[in-house]
Length: 332
Image 1 (cartoon, one colour):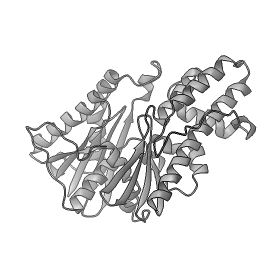
Image 2 (cartoon, helix red, strand yellow):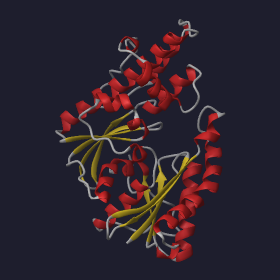
Image 3 (cartoon, one colour):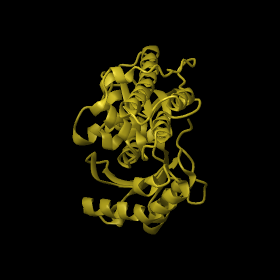
Image 4 (cartoon, rainbow, N blue to C red):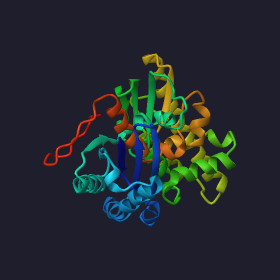
């Protein structure tokens, strides 16, 4: 079976094609829309939707060319329908429904976070081994910070998440307070990696002590804002210390909760995915974890095609109804 999948959950237009018989990824394409968002200092949902309208057909066309296939050669279509920006998701779901209708093939909708959960299994598409189950999985991005106990293929349990802001949003808000361009997270990571000393990381910003396996980053943002008010930002060393110390607080919080979850669930492996999984300090300090390739940590359609392929292998792939409201394969 050949599956064409797309993801438009945020501001990247993504497409991919998976062959379930050979268990190989035949093609993938991502069109980033970060550039149009820079002048607004963040993602504008309406603009993201309009960019998807232009770029998604191009991403699909790229994948068909890479794979040497025609649209009629696709056996099944897959698309994420939640969570994410409503308008952006609507573009993806509507587009896939139209393609599937045009060639009279079935389509299915999937949960974006569930797709992230199983990205370590993308290694199997290259003939490599994936981490052994069970996993403690941290899905951490601009919109999500959540922990899961992944018991086996398609078998998982939600453990906890943020009660306010996501870690990636905290990175970007800290950057905005210091007038860094959007997206600030990768820039903070690079500056801290290349310029910061251990002394620069010692501003005592709070690490949330909220109960259980929940996260909170709103207090950190407030603490950074108060520190900025009292700091001479004309000194680059002072700005660097705030950035590096804020990053350290975010990373330490993520690691503490994730390791706690792994102990409580007796997981054999920690897995980290989502955009913030590209952060080099997190990768360095949570050294025992499995991190997928950076291109598969950020939004992509390869993980959606993989998820559809896993459902097919387990005999659980069901077509969505043409006349029904798009539904999710899972609620978190």
